Image (cartoon, rainbow, N blue to C red):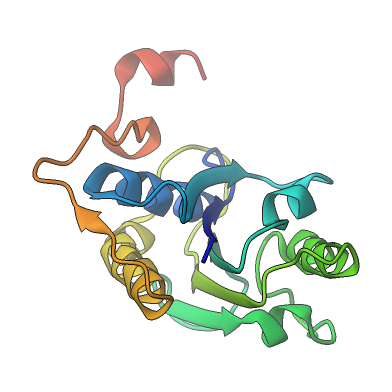
Length: 181
């Protein structure tokens, strides 16, 4: 079983940086079998997104979603919801890209059969780094949800005895990095 765990989003658009933040937290806290799991911050996907989906049995996508509800609320979508008829409202900021990439991977014959999107309702998508307090507070539950998805797929992540540095400059703050923006 090969699983891609991907964070989608732009860390310079506040809560759109949710996916990249959660992926960095997972990398910091757990080790994963490299032959089974690929963790990656895909940023804002482009035409190459389908190539990231190819060859995987399953995907766990993490993103902010255009959903009604209180900011910080986690919502979940499966493959059928992501590839079905376009909803009246966009589900994620990158919905068209995800849908098209899944369709393209299917046409090429190497698309994932299982897909789960862990999404969060954003509070703020304005320009600038850093998550809103509501979305930042949802990161822990999103990490737990991603780990549960992996366990349901038969993959047991191993907690690190000491977490690695996350490198989340937009969350932890780095005066040197902020000065370059």
